[in-house]
Structure formats: structure tokens, C-alpha cells
Image 1 (tube, rainbow, N blue to C red):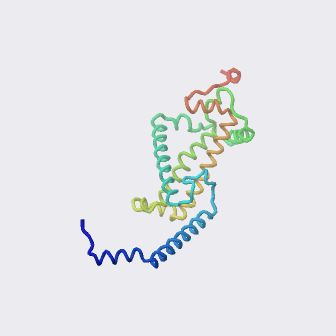
Image 2: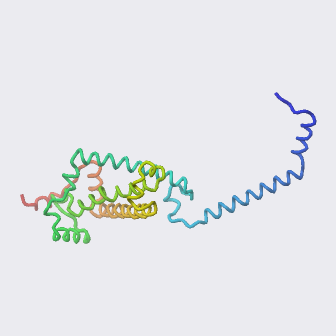
Image 3: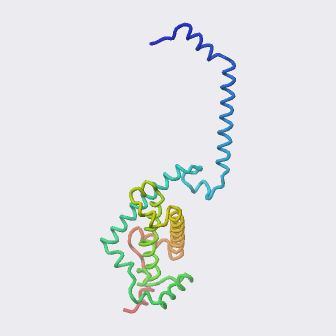
Length: 228
């Protein structure tokens, strides 16, 4: 092992043991500690849009929040692609979500809006199918709201803009894309809230069972009232 000459060792020992240097180092440490404490206090004092218990991460960190956002966004996209593939292959969209011509009349739509507002839900055989209002809502969310939300989110990514620069022109710049992304995301949250509320008030157990198992129970009395 290499050793320092005697003179260098003495000079090194004197430098470490110098009281003035120790005082300066202690003052610098105290100053750095105060600056960090003031920065943390200022950072934590920033107004929060949502409480800590509902956010990831719970503390205020934009970089970490963006990582969580991208993580769940890609899970969301992958799940959406699987659903789209299933809907096309199984003809779910054509069989269950495409409205019939008679369902789109103004009178029928007005009647269904009034029924939903008064929490009057279909009975009997009709309860096993989507009505026109539900079909139009699902089609709007699946084929317009979600694609716009995903596309505007990708537009705000400089890395993706290098791959598809036409997205910036399509949405009129990153700021316009950011505004549309916020509007579509808020609309999706509103859709989920209303959807969950309707599930709760229309029979939570029966609805949850049908979502998980595909089995939806229809009241026999209501079914007997349906004309053959």
C-alpha cells in the first residue's frame, strides 16, 4: 500500500485537525441544512389540487408523478387494445352497441332520457340489453373520447412527436393538446362516476355478478309481462 511521506502526513493531519477549518465546515453544514429545510417547507406549502392519500406519489414530486402517469397510461392503452380486438372479433360492437334504426328517433331518445333522469330502469327482457342512450354513450366513449385522450397525451411527449410530428399540427400545438387532454380525461371521470352511480342504484349485486360472470338475473314476474 502506498504511504505518504512524513512531511505530507504532517501537513495532511494539520489540515484535518485545524479548528478553523472545522468551524467553516460546520457553518457550511448548518447553512446547507437550513436551505434544504426552507426548500422542503416551501415545497410542502404549495397548494395541492388533491389530498395526499389519493395521489401517486403522496408527496409533491412532478417527475415521479409523470412516471406513475405513464405507467398507468400504458396499462390503460394495452387494456383498451385488448378490448377493441375482442369487440371486433366477437362482434360485440355490432351485436350489442350498434343502435337499431328505430332506437334513434327523437321520441325514443327523449323517453329514455326522462326514464334515466327519474331512475326508472327497464324491466323484463329489456333489462338484458342496452338501450339507445347507453349504446350511444358507449360508442362515444370508446371511439371518440378515449382515442382523443390518448392521442393528445402522446402529442405532449417530445419523444413521440419526433416519431409522429403531424400530431402537433393535428391538435394545434402542445398547449391545445394539453387542454383537450384535460377535457377528455375529466369527461371520462364524469362518465365513470355516473356509470358507477347507475350500477349502484339499479341493483349492485345483480350488475356486479353480470360483469364478472356474464349472468344477469331477470325478474320472473317482469318477464311474464312481456308479450310473446
